[in-house]
Amino acid sequence: MQKKELMTDSLILGLSSGSSCLVTCGMVMFPYLMAGSAGVKRIAIDLSLFLLTRLVIYFILATLAWYFGQALFSNQVVRNVVPGILYIVFAVMLVWYSISKNRNQECPAKIVKTVNNHRLVPIFLGIVNSLGFCPALFIILTKGATQGTLIQSYIAFLAFFIGSSIWFLPLPLAGKIRKKEVLKTIGILATGLAGIIFMIKGITNLIGGIING
Amino acid sequence: MDNALTSSGMKKSFGRSLLYTLPMFLITFMFMTGGRPDFSRPASALAMVVTFLLVNILYFLMHYTGKTDKLRAILFIIFALSLSFTLINNMLETRNSMSFSQADILECKIPFCHLVIPMMILPAAFTNSIIFPGSIIGGFANIASMVVLWLVATLVLGRGFCSWGCFYGGWDDGFSRIRKKPAIKKISEIWKWMPFAVLIMVSLTAALSLIPTYCDWICPFKAVTEFEQVTSVESATKAVIFVSLFAGLVVVLPVLTRKRTQCSFLCPLGAINTVSNKVTPFTIKIDKKACTECFKCVEVCPLFALSTEGIKEGKVSVFCSKCGKCVDACSKNAIHFGIKGVPSGTMKNFSRNLFLFVSFLFMSVFSAGSIINSLQSLLNLIF
Image (cartoon, rainbow over all chains, first blue to last red):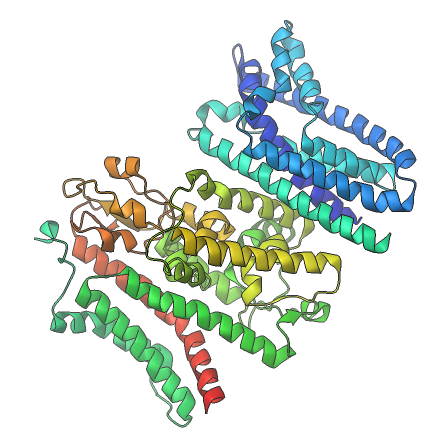
């Protein structure tokens, strides 16, 4: 897969994942990130810690995905066909997520309520948020596993991280955003759209894989 | 006196309507002929005369009957059909095919359309490059002229561009008028935010890949203009997407819902135009004193711009494309064309006259070339 295409795909996934994280977890995370005096400096530090933790976790996942991918997808036929099937399955899950009315009950970051040390909260949130195994993360794991080199797997996860982090950047300003419902709606629709894009990509990969396989 | 207009208040006498049409008559004459009509080629002359008469008769009737939407839609639909016809004709003449090859991309021969604009902004800002393989200046449908036309029209008309300038809008506008009553009445309003989701996705992916991703993968109008040669599974998938989206969003859903579903649920440029409605001087206003809350306007609005709550509060949303359908549907003339800063219920006639002149002139000038070309080609084919 070309570097550009790899980055574009991963960014789309990140965007979809970020919007769903924000929709499901935003309401849980927001009070913790904003708690206390909520000065700009504090918020910036907390948000940076949160994002940095996510980045570290994603690099670990990228390494693991690539390592296990080398063993699992060594066969050419499997390499051509399985990612296509996984794409379709996870993309369907992503679309299902966007149309599901129960999505608010699925936030893994709710566990954060059990953490008492406020200093650790952003780090804990980062871990919980990046390991909240949503369909988009499954797709990026598949992508990382099917890359030829470890660097490519890192690139995929880095683009995924950037795409998902964009949604968190306005979080400190969340209190001032008037039309939160509108942003939430656009986020959900973007998630569904990403699901459709990856479903199509999965079908194309699968057909291409079968023809070439 | 202007404040107390009745439902027929927008109608004018024959003489007065002629007087209002005179400036349009002169400007379109100058634009189409350059001041010197050429009758040496009969097909070309006939096409020009027919287009000239069509435009001016429609504008005259807008004043004479006081109706806007149906007369606008006639030119709008003809514009969409003729543009597709002209594009296809041009491509068949220059490359013998509606599909473009890699060579056409490398030689920057792809006609530009305004739907690419949202994807051009970020790459142009960060890389100083235009990510569309078209001609910047000169040649058919070049980038510079289209961007300038869109920018001017959007700043003046706001989302009015979608009903008075977009050469694709006429397709789903036309299909949305086929049935008298909608077969599907309830559509969740959530979907009207979809163009913003599409805009975010295509802008960022285009910025990263430096490929106009909307044109490459999504645009339904590829089905009636041009498309990539089918040489692989990927290009075949794209062709299936283009045709499916065109059939679904431009034909089937508009027929079933009487709404412009492609414009409402997909178009990323529509999202930008929606935002531009905030700065345009023209708007649609609700005269709360005259409104009886019958909500006919909400029912007929093709772009989900009106809601019952909004009408009660006297508000029209930014999704409005100023097509005039609600204005025509209101028997009390409570919903009307307006100018920002002017209180609702006042200067109704003046606002309508000013808006019609600007918007119809834009549509006439923008559409005339392709209508004349298509008529000329048709006449050449027949005779």
